[in-house]
Length: 274
Ligand SMILES: [Zn+2]
Ligand SMILES: [Zn+2]
Image 1 (cartoon, helix red, strand yellow):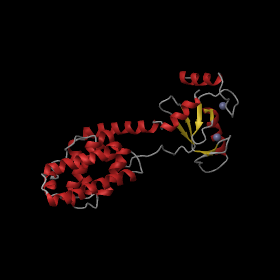
Image 2: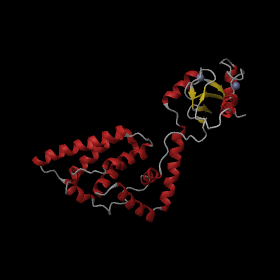
Image 3: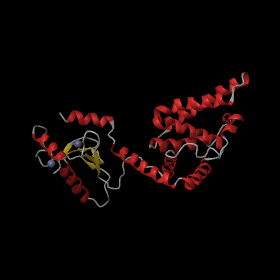
Image 4: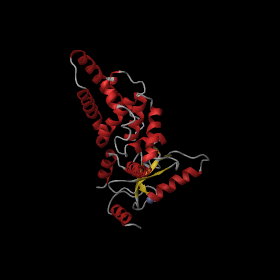
């Protein structure tokens, strides 16, 4: 028995409700994920096993023995910062999983900026004010990029926010362009600061790199797949070591994400520990 188990067990002996299944003090305190009823980890795991054995197909949820609410997992090993989940259906994975393509894009963010600077002529793009031409591939590129960086499936709100900010920046610039001639540098700098400001609350430390990537993608004038192909070619040639370092970092990132406790859940555990 680990120190943690002993601590959890003894805190339950000194008051606290008994386990509804074995009626003894709760050992290895665990919760069902929806109704939050508390059981010994072993007892509730056993309960799921018994319920599952009565049906032929794999269950994805079980009803709580106390309140009959459907739950898909047991939350256990909670230490104040992280917890483990035991799923009723062992094939369930936790939350968002990066696709191969998203993972590859995340790798790119671990490489040095400017890897493709000589491939696409960024300064020409600004000189010709090509930003003012609509880019029909931007939305699909942005979506994939945000999903990879935020590790979330649903990025619609951020996507529309960024697209809206870019659109109004272009409109403002176009209007002013008729009256004054601003230097190419000013135009480029303003683009970067406006986009960084819009993206920072969502992308935090990766914001500046994201804006560089956005600029590069827009300057490339090609679609997402073609852009990826160019990137991949360059990345594979120069940076096999960098890729493996990036992969390790991404795995760590995914791991951290998996066990991160949502604030609402933390609150619940704190209340319960009294
Ligand atoms: Zn029990
Ligand atoms: Zn319940």
